[in-house]
Image 1 (tube, each protein chain N blue to C red):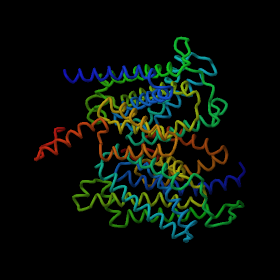
Image 2: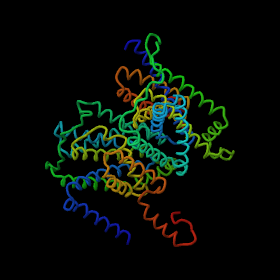
Image 3: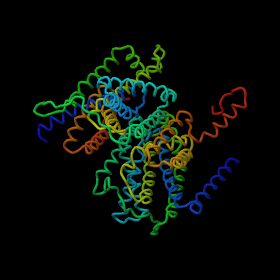
Image 4: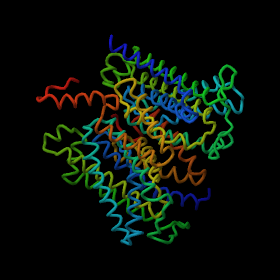
Length: 323
Length: 287
């Protein structure tokens, strides 16, 4: 009961801080945090797939599909933002099905290799289909997001939109993870043959988890397109895909908040060198160190520190409490 | 497409195929033993090419000395990667893959400050062209075929005729049983890393005089190698060789006719079809 109260209090404080940020921070922080929220959506949407033990190394491709579809629908056909956003996400989901169906039936590594190649495929298509996407000149002139016919022209309005999209995504993913479906995903990740012997259709559930991720990656991409209002094919390359993976691993795989912590922490920490090669160096070192020395991710850090303190004070070692 | 152009692109296709095969063989060997895909293979290819740049072009050493140096240096690097990344993770396949991806992005990103922003070029080692069936082919590209072929045969003999190769095959069949027979699994895995890395370095070293050098140069060959092992079936060495030949030819002939990017897109569609209808690869067996 105590614990639950603490969690609730923490959430309220976070919510108040998020709501008040535009009042205290300038446009710079509003901009940065809207992007952080996009990263949180991306990181959290990869989690169902990872829970099933499927290494999706091409998540940015689905973000790219969502971004380009939504941008082109709104720009060329004057489709309202809500519908273009949904259209982009649905196309990303459909493409996810087409890629996932053939490759998810086999061992995980096939899927991993296919997703890596798929990032390159989407980048090339965005680059070569010049009449539609403007290729390497980049797609500009994307309309600002609007809600119910009202254009969100200020950075603050767009910030709140990002906040709402993120909260909605997290709510859906949280509910699913704590439903029967989430239990099935975990069982597949732990022992897929055992799950299969209990009557779980593992290929179908892996595909479902993957497509769910594609949908929300499409949402993140759609928001990004209307927020930044300029799309450039190489942006959604292999590096962004690995960053999404890094958020999950550095944050921690064991709990729902892991990817959220990872995305917020790393996005803010890497902000000073965004766009330079040092950003990637920073990310890869963070990833290597976490995997080697903190396999549970940042969310296990408090417990690790507590254990360490306990070790220092106690003279004799006893079996670890994790067992 | 004229017949001459066809012959030319077919020969270039075979020489490309030899590079892809060298890459894919290392990946397949490591997969067979440890069930991991070495995502760092492309970065090692890049480093192999840069060793040629610094030792052969800048250092003035003979090409073959630089070639051997490249293989040895990166072979040692491979052993160290096994020691410091693969072994501490203790067989966790997924964390190992993620760690190897992190290593790749680190090597690529660190390449820019270390090697400089500008593309590097290595002068030709075998200048001139040779007339084959009425078309001129650069000797540089032709020489790749026997050199890579020698390495493939060397690998075959190593795996099938030496005690160490037998240990590798034993681990591939059953790791625990191999350990019970006295095979030091850690050391042999480390050597497999070394062999895989050395083969990737050799591919990079062979390509250095032909393509421009930059830290991202390993991406394309890595993706090609992935396509080959999906085509040929994971863990299968004949599959890797046949898949490599197929992809090299398709790649070169279609690239000549339509351009490099459509060729890549087409090969991706091809592997999706293979996965749909023959999921274990054209020459693979059920996992």
